[in-house]
Each structure stands twice: as structure tokens, then as C-alpha cells.
Image (cartoon, rainbow, N blue to C red; front, side, top):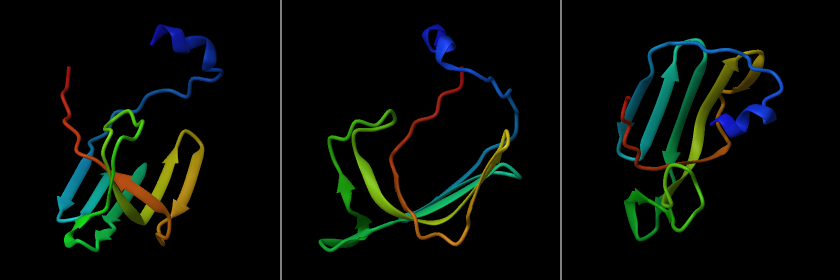
Length: 102
């Protein structure tokens, strides 16, 4: 991480808030109240309507296998960076993720 220091021109700070995550079937949602709301729904595979189309061998920091999804809503309001796309319509993806706290 120390190597990233020179590339950060303006450190905006840190906030500590609870994170809420829900998963049901092909739907995923994440919320940090007042800061971030993100929800996606997997794009059903024609071969199995209860499973999403998968993208394999990607170069992604969380997983090389991603489920193709469509955003059903996004809101981001952190450190003067704002995005309001709660109407959905954007592309998205999700992947298995194992969280470990230090």
C-alpha cells in the first residue's frame, strides 16, 4: 500500500459505518445507509433460468469468475462524489466473496 501514496493527490478521509448485504437467488444488494446503495440481479442463463450467465477467466481483484448482472439501482454519495442511478438500467456483475476481518 505504501507504493500507492504518491498516486493519491487528495486523501478524502475515512468513515466507519455498518454494511448491510443481502443475497437471494440471483439478487444481491449492499447498503451503507446514507452513503451507498447498490443492487443487481443476475442475467438468467438460457441453459438454466435459475442461474446467471457466468464470465470466466476475468482479471478482477475479487474473483476470476463473475456472474453477469443488471443493476436494479445505484446511489453513491461519499466525499463529494455523487451518483444517483436508482432507476437501474446499468450493467453489473457479482461474485462469491469471503470477507475476513483483521
